[in-house]
Length: 503
Image 1 (tube, helix red, strand yellow):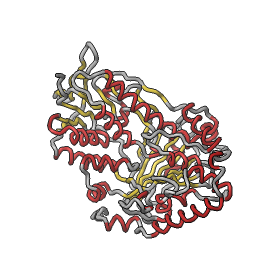
Image 2 (cartoon, helix red, strand yellow):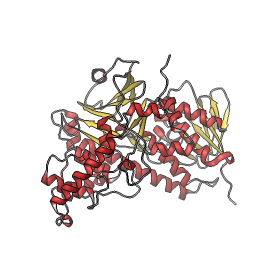
Image 3 (spheres, one colour):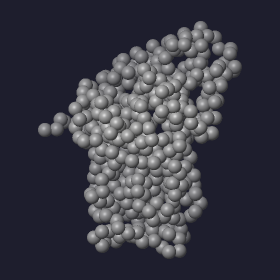
Image 4 (cartoon, one colour):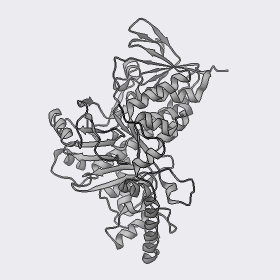
């Protein structure tokens, strides 16, 4: 009988490292020792973090209770993302969570919406989303358990302080037996015959041995790249932003239940509302602007007083050619980087962990399991990549060199084929296990200004008057349900999720 793995060593803390520790500990229990090696001398990249609804599944898997989690991380709810000036200057649209269409009785919503637009070009997609309506009205609440209620479609994620989240997970994991070692790695011992990592050597001469190593060491990828030279696929020809500058500012007014992404001359700015402050950042391309100009753009976009000096980051968009090599699995920034335009950073840590549990090895480290894992994370990474590229490529902005480049650049065939099918017949292609649903693809393609040439002829027999009546009733029903929700901050306070003001 092959022997089970009994020790896992995670290199690096932060959100990724402690997410890994908490989930692996919860899944494997006492039969496998989990150790985190981190150094206080090495900073974490964490900034204000926006997430997607899958974060709820992760929190439930590790046993986080929502009110306590939200109080500790100063979290607010998130119902989607508002994109400002992306399709064209002066335009804005929401990419809401959940489904579009409000559970209509007459068939497939994307095709029906094309029919509605043919009769009324000003038809508003947001009228058919409870998340979009709630976001616009500043309201929030729990998902209804009654599946006949429109509020059963109310899906939410969170905005929170990523550093506080990592600390919260650390306390949870350590309380359940995860061992933490404070130390800086200065050398990595490997088996000469196959490169498998055997131990980490620390600056103070201690050694940490393990069987499975998780690399959460950030962009440097100390194990996956430094020791194993996994290689890197560079996606910057499609996603040319390569720098970011981030800073918090004072909160001004109620926290909105959505993230904002605002297009700028050489990239885009984020605005993430927390309970106590607002997270801000500018993601930009150094080929089209310089750092001083980027800082000016960031500062000019703040809606409150600056609370800390801006932090600057550099990155190359892409992914490791193998996220799992030998006995090392890379997670978070060590596995690659896709800009946080659709708030996928922590989701990719979570999905990588789920894939690891699915393909979890024993001490033989079957190459079949390793190949299965790498194929799964590669496929998801490329789907997310394509969805992000869509936002840039489907723009009508003109005059800024950055936007002229992304508008006219060649894109992956996998994306151009999706867009062509929608533009021709309103067909939305999506696998059942894809992160972004047909509703998400529709929200972004429509919001960016892509219009189908015509609806499918299969729907030519739909009565236009009956369709308009049905959807008008749907829109009224959704709005009535949303208007009954409390205001966002009132809901958080009533739910016990609002933190006490700091003294």
